[in-house]
Image (cartoon, rainbow, N blue to C red):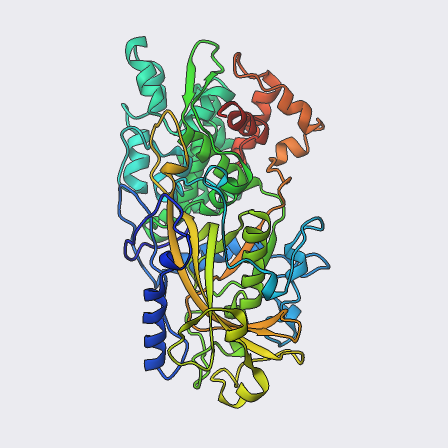
Length: 550
């Protein structure tokens, strides 16, 4: 989904955590020296963004589309506070800074967790073979899942859609090629076009029907989109192209950072890694369509982008570009409550309990600001330092790192903004290295494994407020680079399209009817075609693809 590439950094494909010899003390020493040079103020830094792609992403910090796109995504995950969940960007805090009252809502009832710092593991990582998988973010400016990543395509939204509409690029042309050429051409189609081939027979009549969809005719952008969809062959593919039509018509371009990384980051956690291709008989009963692991991942990412159930969410959406800071510490002031994001207590409790306690991943928006970088977390490692040590040198134990808050309070650079819990007895400094997955470029590989995943790191420093039982009760970030918001789905959650939910059929029965050795049942085809017009894919079909790819 939305993100901007700034500078490439080292991408790892193997775990790096193995004790002090591999802990990156140099990075934290540099951060400490930079902060000391500022008199201990919060560092205004941004983590480097990593991705391996075949094309260049642009950075346009003044883009109005970023605010709009980010806000739209935030609405998908952010819910009013209830007994189970919380969202920090509404009025639920009643003028207070994040009070960490939402921690219980991030953990399912059957997931045990601890707030005691001395019970938390100093390092942990999800095993290689169980880790989530890397995938493309399927940029809107390439047509999302309609992007022909393995064949001919354009370099941006306009050139890409023009190629699909051209005589030799049009799907109707490809389907009428001689048999000796057709199968190779079909193999290079986009994930959306391959999906279209198995959910119905594509003719001029069935895709021209897009023009009949109801919508106020005075909506010029919508009319243009409908005309576009009347020309693009297929069921799902036309919907993919119209997602960029809005931005193109209103701004003259579709920014390259927009995509579905919010779907990928969740699907990578919720769905098993596709290990091999799956061959499916198309709706015409003669053409076999091969879905490679990258294409199965794409469909899974799209399923979770469009049809995910409610998530467990914590953090705020910082949409502001003019954040107000405390003059003494450089920390964000209360007036910008939404930009305070995830509190260090929330972050430390979640990462150590999810990864360290249960070896289960979750999604983090990697940094504070109005861009959105949704990434699955793989592992962490941290060390302690004393907050009264300007050089922030690591110490050997938690006991050595404890600083009495009562005696430190008047020296605390965060004293103007810290809303310490009355039970706070100690302050302890933390330096943490976090491993997370980043996107990769799709390829038609015949096999997939963790060795093809792209992994990078982020580095965070912060302090934690502890009570006399060494339970975390609060904390402050020491640099602006920190997780924005965190979210996760329960392990048993499924993404199911509205067409399946409200079809009148039991989902298990729908899924049982999926058979890739013959054309899909007419009822299933009809359901899938109607779902496509609403921009959804059927969970029953996508789940079966993942199962067959094991």
